[in-house]
Length: 261
Image (cartoon, rainbow, N blue to C red; front, top):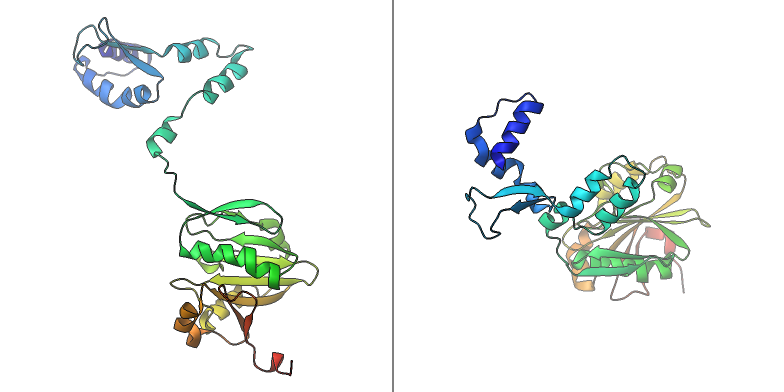
C-alpha cells in the first residue's frame, strides 16, 4: 500500500514524508512504473475502486523474477530475454506514426527511406536519375533529409577532402564524390527555396575553400515550371538539372561549353 511505501522510504532513505501524502506517491512515483508494466495494481477485488483499502501495489511477476536474479550468473541472459519481450514505455508514449516514406536506392545498392514530401521526392530523383547520368561512380557523402539531417553523413571522407561540415543549414542537400575524377558534387534540391544564387555560391565556396577536390555546383528542380520561378537567381559557373528532362543539363558557365555539336 502507498502508506507502507511512505514508511519504507522514511525508514531507509532518511526522508520525512507525511503519511497523508499517499496520493502523491500514487500519482507521482508509481504512475509511470505502472504504465511501464513494472508495477501492477493489486487488490482482493481486481475491480476495486482506487481508494479501496485493500488495494495496493506489487511487482509484476516476470519483473520480480528478473530482480531476484540480479548479480547472479543468469542475470545477463534473463535481462536480455525480458527486454526483448517488452515494449518500452518510451515507445508506448511516443506513439510512433507509420508515416509514408520515400524509398531511395543509393549508388552502392543500399536502401534508405526519406520522409514524405516534394523536396525528398526530388532528392530521390537526384540520387536515382541525375547521378547515374552525370555522376557515374559517385558515392553519396551526405543527404539532408527534411526530418533527419543526419540520415547519411560520411564524416571520414568529408574530413579527408577538407570539407568544412558546419551547421546543418549551411550544407547543401546532397554531397556526392567521384573518386576517379576527384569531383565533389554540391547539389541543392529546390522546392520552395534553396537555389544556388550568388550568395549561396559564396557560402558553399567558403565551406569548401580548403577542399582537395574539384567542385561542381548543381541546382535541381522537379520541372521547368519550378525552374522558371528561379531562373534569374541562378549563379554563373553552376549547373541546373530538371528532373522531368533528366538527360539534359543547363550550363551557366559562359564560354566553357561554347562550341559546335
